[in-house]
Length: 241
Image (cartoon, rainbow, N blue to C red; front, top):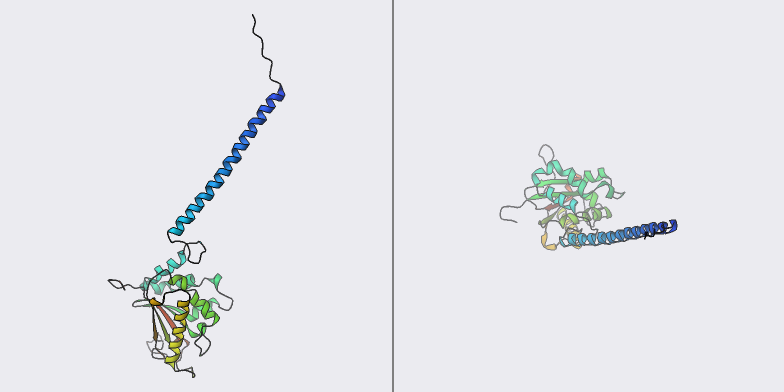
């Protein structure tokens, strides 16, 4: 008995099978995309939490690593290299794109020195960029400049000495009184911004130590005699501080 031939599949049925397979593939593709997206968010969350646990997040909450502040501290821990790196330190502390309009880069460079000391590095600001003439209250420019030091200071536990110097140009206070008042103002501002009080010491020298010129002679009349020196004692002696 001859076998009965199967009837050929109608074209419409073939089309439906193909369409069904295509829809299945698309559905699988979108499910896969959704799964990958959820997995990426989970991974990012874990990375963020791990970074926070390691203490690498910026203390101000921006979520960025304090690379710049660490670089400044590393430079300041090598006082013997400061002569060649002082402009680099200035640029890291006060980038051009963050300076307010009232402070030009040239004005900053003229009124800020980075000096190597026996026990660390001193940031030396003249009174012209920190205070009103004869005054002991930080100007708006002074508050901005001193405030920019705080993130860097929180990345090191080095002791800090704030020293005031001036001359006889101010008639309302003695040089010793004015230099002490200015140094105290800067110290109090830094403490108020979160730098621990226990790290500070205060010095006032009045007009006892004028700047020295190229010939090694003291200069009685110089704007740089009226200054505040912030010394970070980063040069660790043997056995620690």
